[in-house]
Length: 296
Image (tube, rainbow, N blue to C red; front, side):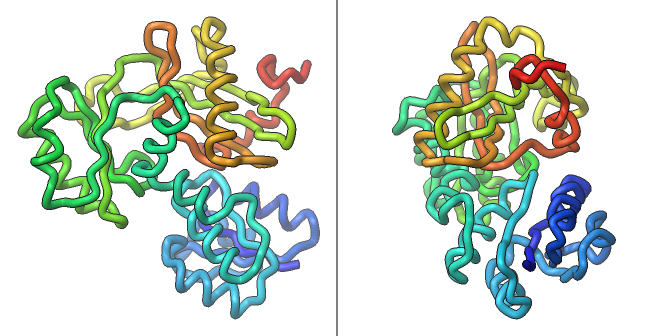
């Protein structure tokens, strides 16, 4: 069996090891010349995981049996689309992948399914930025391109001038030409790893995401705290939200990552994805935890 892995960072090394342990061959696609996972793969091709056509041609040429990735968002859409084109299995469909990798469609899905999230404005036309934002009266606001990795282009603004400038900047970074502007909610940010089983949703771990406090515009993560404090009072709400997201996005038998805020005893979802968390989170996902229900 031959598996095409999209992205070759440190997190993907563990994925490649798991695949190799089954005796399967690994083809790696990553746009860096020497990504960290290159040494663990059988072959490496220097192509972007976001270039669907090049990934399609590579998968066809190498006659792969499976396309997969881990711990990264945007490659999920390439995985689902190329798998569909080649008739290969994928744990999420093209439609689901699009809704989970494009914040424009994700936020709309949250709203349509009653999933608690910050109030937002969706903009899909650069020429209509000012028409869409002048109704916004409450600040701060968060401006986001809809399809970037790792908080790229995400900006906190405190007034209308900054809002308009950030919106134009976000459009420059959005490959699909869509952005969102959402109300800033003060609170404790959580990273929640979930397994969506065929019959039940299981919370695996919850950590607190810490960001640099003196950075007023951007959102640089410098550490995670595990286990997160103050989870007990909202644990049932977190479980309910996880179930709502799994149902709304038609997820089954796959991982799910939820980024959320606790604010005044309520849970507000920032984003969700059909993957496990990055940043070597896979290491402590293997550890017995009270949340997972596995006793040490």
